[in-house]
Length: 120
Image 1 (cartoon, rainbow, N blue to C red):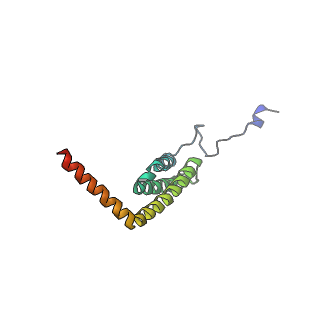
Image 2: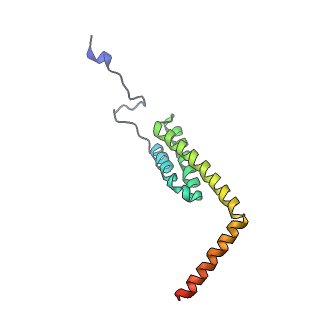
Image 3: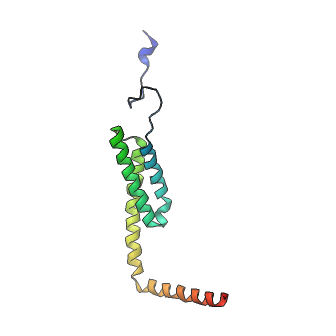
């Protein structure tokens, strides 16, 4: 029996060179997904980068014919951060309509005017 009978080719992506398969759009999807996590403090930026992560994962799947793990992770993170960004935006808009927020905003503006007049 030849020892090569027991070798199993783990390279399932039809890559004949033996190099590991990397797709630029899959990596871009993952990077944009990771970037969207700290962007949740700026909800619009989180929504945009999350959607870009999803789009890059879809492009990666269309180009390679399958969804690699990096693209799946990027898409998952992108979906979660996009949904969280949308929810945080809705909550923020709702809270800005409350009278307590309006009073707090006016207090901050008045303090700024006092500080500005005293600084000059």
